[in-house]
Image (cartoon, rainbow, N blue to C red; front, side, top):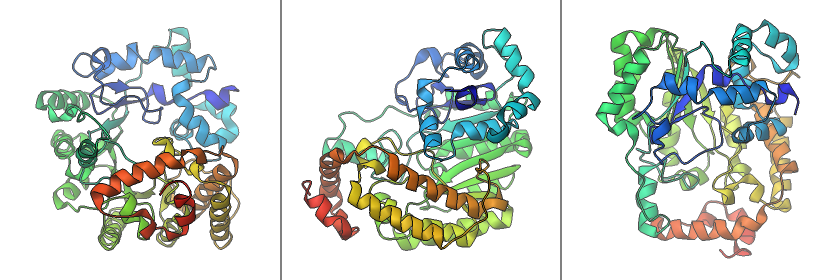
Length: 432
């Protein structure tokens, strides 16, 4: 790989704390075990600044030496299929544009920092300005593509039907001492700019409210942008009033389709209620000038209905984005679909694109830019066409998918073919 294909600026200003309270160097890196307490790298034993300097220096050195990082594979995979990666977004934050990589890197305000790190074994004079804060698995939803570490409701169900033996350990932010310590570290950060929260369902997670209130009380909120995603099942005036006191809000609205299959994959949601909350959040965001995205997690169960999301986004000037191409659970990857189903989805997506013409533009990296929303939506749709055309056939995973759905349905008293009858022949031929 050439330098512009591997280099990422993220380790110079970003870090993450996962569900167990363990620090990680990136929100987009390939998932590690977020429930295993790694004491060497945990909030119980080390400060964020210590981790940022001591443990992230080797990553910076590797990137400066033009070496690909194995944990960065999700970003490399997204770029391979024309989807905007976290790496590209982080580069844009420091003024580096992919089409003018060399020149814009030299003119970046971070260029001297890169030189400093190259001369000092990866050390940096910077401090974390951009965080992903994992608040644990406190959640009222049980999405079929999710996991016990991200949903308390799903954890309880998995234990009941035998998919896990033990419940996930407590979330780090349930410990008031650790939460208070983290808040003090945030309030002591001189250049804090962006906090992105994930759950669970953030809006109902007590620690989300506690952190927001503490930042408002300290006055930090005036300089901070808050990012979070809600599953469109709740509406909290208290949380909304806190959010209004921050510099800016990047609002993510999780939804898979505007058809009934959304109820199945985002169990136990109700499409009518989901649409109601969707419209309410969109209206609020427009009133407050918040940046809003529809956050999707396309799977083999929903990709054929994704055009309904693009249509809503197009009509409401909203961008559409997923964190990456789903790679876990493996039996729900889009690439599990065999050729016949892929051809149908590609045809449907292409028809949607053809019916929504846009001006040709360079690749849109700033997917939140309101001036190019329509182009961004088409770009996202095109990335799934590319993925469906070029990803390896993994239809051998269909029996595992059917087995998993059977186990869930035995507890939920529903049936996938009631939602997507067009897959009847495919699923029944693999054991449904």
